[in-house]
Amino acid sequence: MEATHLYRSPNILGEGPIWSVAEQALYWVDIDGKKIQRYSPTLKEYASFPMPIKVSLLAFRKAGGFVCGTENGFYFWDADTLTFEPISDPEAGKKDARFNDGKVDRNGRLWAGTMTAEGASSSLYKLDEHLSVSRMVSEVTISNGIGWSPDNTSMYYVDSLRYTINVFDFDMKDSTISNRRTFVELDTHVGVPDGLTVDREGYVWVAIYDGWKVMRFDPSGKIDTEIKMSVSRPSSCAFGGKDLDELYITTISEGLSEVQKEQEPLAGDLFMVKTNTQGFSESEFSG
Image (tube, rainbow, N blue to C red; front, side, top):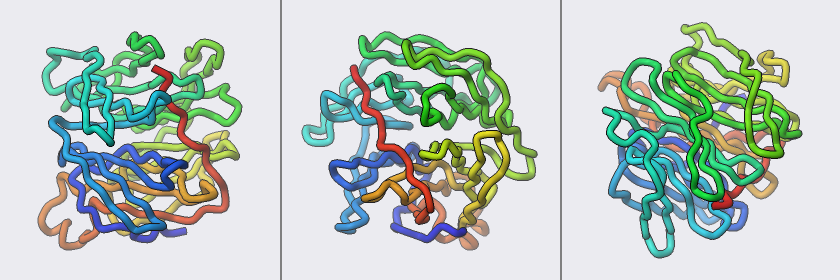
C-alpha cells in the first residue's frame, strides 16, 4: 500500500490533522509556519489562517470553533471571527517548552502533551470541561500521538524519543488512565513514532518520522500493514472522507538538508491513502 500525493502545501512542520464531517474538509497545522490550514478534497479548496504564535494542535469545540495547544498554552480559536483567546498555560516560564500533539476523548476532554528541545521533562495534560488542567503523565521526552480503542477501555500514547507506543487502561466514566505498559517499541533504525489514529477494528495507525512510512498495528501490537511514503518525515494521520475510509497524512520538511529537499520535493505536503477500514469522527471538546 502506498500513499498518494494530495495537495501541494510545503509545510515546515505539518501536524495535527482532523477531519470535519460537517464541512467535509481537513484541518491541520504548520507549527513553525504559524498557520492553521483547511482543505476540501471534493471542492479542491484550500485556505490558510496565519496565527500570532506557534499552534501545535487543534480540536473541534462543541460550543463552536476550536481549542488549540500552542507554544504558550491552551487557546480557543474561531475560524469565522479569527479570535484567539487564551485559556491557561501549564508550563509557563519553562524554557523552550510548547505543546506538541493532542486529541479529545469521547467524554469531551482534551488530552495534550508538551515537548522541549531535549531531555525527559515534558508531560501529558488533560483539559476538562471546566477548563481545569491536570497533569496525567510526567517525565515524557516528546509527547505525541494519542488515541482510544473502539470500546474506550484502552488509550494509546506515544513517547517519541523512547521509540515507544504506550497503552493505558482507560476509565471512560471519569477519563482517567492506569496500568501503563508498552504496546510497541520500535528499533531506532525503523524511525520515530509520531502521530496516531485508531480505526473501527481497533488497529492503531502510526506515522513514522524518518521512516518513510505509516505503520498499522493490530490490537496485540503486531505489525499488520505498512503504507509507503515518498517523503521521509510523515508526522500524523487521521481518517476522513465521506465514509471515513481515507487516511490523510501530514508531513514535515523541517531539518532536511538541501540535498534531501531535492530528493524529497513533496516534503511538507499533504498525502492520502484509501483504506479498507473506517475511522471515527473526531470528538468535540466540551468546555
